[in-house]
Image (cartoon, rainbow, N blue to C red; front, side, top):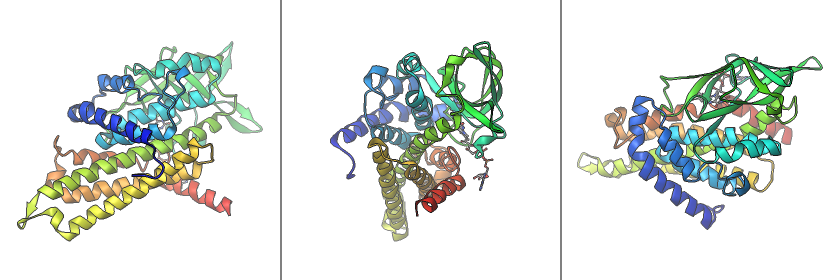
Length: 385
Ligand SMILES: Cc1cc2nc3c(=O)[nH]c(=O)nc-3n(C[C@H](O)[C@H](O)[C@H](O)COP(=O)(O)OP(=O)(O)OC[C@H]3O[C@@H](n4cnc5c(N)ncnc54)[C@H](O)[C@@H]3O)c2cc1C
């Protein structure tokens, strides 16, 4: 039970849980082992209404609140983080800025197709010299005869390289204003000439997710692909990251929940010294601490979603939710691994704790590292008082 959730939220949780258990769980281990992006499973997520669910029906969505979508990410990630990340990146980073900042023509052109499951959209900020320091972006978009000529690259991009990848919103330099770089968000369709995509493999984490290096070599897109006004790229980025952080928090929460459930089940059946592991106080107290952390993470995240859904400022709470969920995901996965002993260290389709232990490591890095989030939160609380 959770005070913020309504009957509708519980129904959505049940529906997504069933989908994740029946469709993703039996197959994902093999895709993960092959480092293969499961195109058909991703299409099924879309066909089951998980893409763009918080969009109004006129754009192909289902008009749910943001919390419902966050619960969906949590439930998918309870089974697998690669699929949780695919869902989160598409909805929060891909669809999010198009819906929030797109003009009518852009919304009509892009959003309905992005709700079907046949097309994914990505968001590209990170480059070789622009990680935590977003202003380090070096990709340029120069205006030329009704087009933007784009040169540069984007790195690590989730949903950027597969056959479903339909395009990306990038943040690029479009000039200078008062001696400062001017950043603008620009939409690049996969067919744009000079756009090259290269999948990145051999990851520690999210091995069934699509991450790519993207190159823009004199890549031409029409000026009408500009998202929001010229010079508003950092605003688009900051707003996108605020909601993106809610979805990364949901991946952490779901992963922690999945690891906890696995550890609890194992502790109740594995026997040593004639007793189940759960009968030893040091193990049952681990489970108690894990469950407490998950409860706190869930309350922090749902509260941040409630603020967003009800039109309040939620940036600090989103940063707190992301920081907390990602850190407890590490702690819970680590304790779960301890409960499994040596069995946990081997890849095992029945008990995939080894995958959960690896996957949590991205969460303290992507969409604001834990260090950067502490900077965001501390600035916010110091400005408050
Ligand atoms: C699997 C994966 C998927 C991703 N998907 C996307 C995507 O879809 N789109 C996208 O744009 N990006 C994406 N990213 C990029 C991700 O957001 C960045 O990795 C992240 O922002 C950190 O940047 P960095 O890796 O360059 O680390 P760096 O910025 O180089 O940081 C390295 C270390 O230095 C610390 N540090 C940096 N600056 C400071 C400071 N001022 N004070 C204290 N410590 C500091 C950091 O906290 C970190 O510990 C993805 C990354 C991965 C690994």
